[in-house]
Length: 215
Image 1 (cartoon, rainbow, N blue to C red):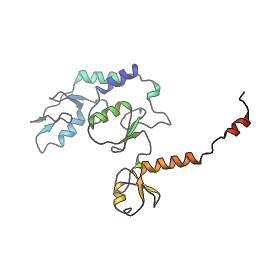
Image 2: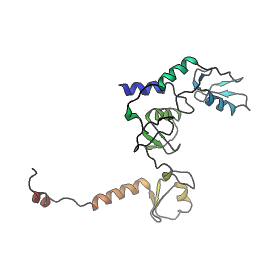
Image 3: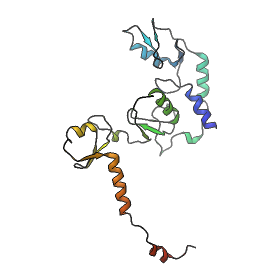
Image 4: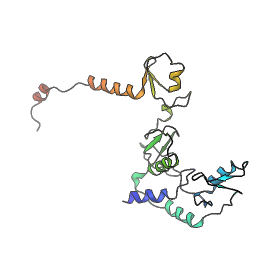
């Protein structure tokens, strides 16, 4: 129960832009809250239009609203930062770290093959809410994100070229590997696993009988 409470509390005070706990929190006229530096950066990019929008609900404002620190919200966030979490929340030597966490890193539970970031449970929920409806391919948390992306086209290596015995992206398939023998990378993995199982020696009934009953 404590785990669920911590997750909900933090989600309520996460900035939708940087996906981290609010820093110098400010509320804009539509009611949504952001880090002061985050919303300032967003609105600086809209200065030429003289129309400023909320990154979440897209409500527009003109002229540019003044930003004042929300002291009550800031106090709540400071208390959240001091909340002690169980040690197994934090990333250890063999764990994948969350790329969004600041300070001590939490364990990542998923990696995004579009953003090329790994996320702890709290930041994963924010990622999913922020990119709702968009095709962001998630995988189990991994340190090998860069190895899964084509360095030439910046696309996921989701095709296996049997001719060259290497993983390629869909653009590679249509270009230099156009006439090669290619299959989906997932299908190649399944075939490789099937062959591995077939080649693994099995203990025969005679072998089991020869060992006699276990003590």
